[in-house]
Image (cartoon, rainbow, N blue to C red):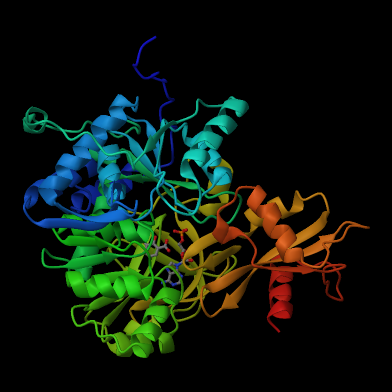
Length: 572
Ligand code: AMP
Ligand code: DBH
């Protein structure tokens, strides 16, 4: 017997569609892509201003006498030391260069420490959400052949140690990939010794693409809300991603005096890069992680830490404004409130700006790439009525009709995009990639937009997706699970407009002959979906049972039309 970990040889990252060389050459030439990797960027960020405050957050590895998380503070120098200790722990647990690591932590100090640790162990983070359950995790672990699963046994929402064990059991039973090793981030890290810290430290990079440049390798896998099946994995490369971060820092004017409150889930692309965590680090700014998104928690942190900048989804921004008005709260330090992830209405934008006395910056982005911002120099009409314009002069935007023909300027159409930080395909999704991208490499966003002056305005959505509090839900995924219920003959999932969360998931069921869903179909289906081990936010909040689905007098209607029709019926 030995204590040494069982080193499991993991498969290399599979080949994935990348930006072709003719474009890559142009992006290097323009100075967008520089030869720096994310691990190098993070190390530089920690070393640029080692004595500057980096992070204020709750820690799950430091508890008070009653077992509650304690607030901790890191300078950039301390962050480097903690991140290197995390890297060491991952390596000792068997994580090898190029391995994929499921990172599933809430907004706690350990999130950032293990993010650095994963990159510095030369591994690729897979950005899971704390809400993900066995259903999603087993999919991600299988798809990526993940070597480790980082979680916190102190996190609320579910028993994460149990979830990890269930994951191991499920993968063992399936036998396709070896289960990931579990890393409980609430177990305190062994600090590095003086000698270890004094050693020169330079994270390596793994060649996983044809490019000879370290910076043009795939750095991590981000998740897409997806429109079909379970979330797709988005392969982002170092240079392209860092370009979007630097561009965001410039546009959003982040600097060393910025104090950024991180409220939305840290793993979101918005929170990571627009300008988010990486943007704050790029500028040696101070980050404050909110333990929860409530106005009470956030207002206290804003006042105590002098927060100047934060980012919210529209429903949260509205809730903050309402609370500030009710309780006569003033937030004098807060200057910029970014709002993005779903559509903000102009009237609401105006109210929020006025109540919170902040500049509103709208952000329309996607984990696949393209990010649009309204600019400080835009007039108030543009700031309230549009979702901004792209980061890069070389972001290509096409607005087309159903036949991919450009519409007249100012008309609404499908948004297609291509550019220096937009992917050319999802990871291991050959089929989806054929439909999700044009032949010449434009990403089909599924968003309906129009030019409004120099900016884009989101006017609709063509994809079968529900946007609940900025969390994207593929209707297909939920319908497939509903249809697997033994008493369900047919099922349609749709989004219902909602004041507090934007949209709620609704399910319309047709039972099999003789079957019934009793007095409370919503509860029956809630139990069913919970047993299916699905993230909570995807579980239908409204369930209607119908004898048959509506048809038109012509007979057949498309699923999309059916969803629209049912949404109208349920709304009225
Ligand atoms: P994902 O592909 O999962 O990263 O989600 C990105 C999608 O979120 C976009 O394609 C839009 O549908 C939606 N989205 C993000 N920001 C906004 C915004 N400011 N206004 C409207 N929709 C948005
Ligand atoms: O919704 C998103 O995915 C999103 C929103 C704003 C995003 O990925 C981003 C900014 O980078």
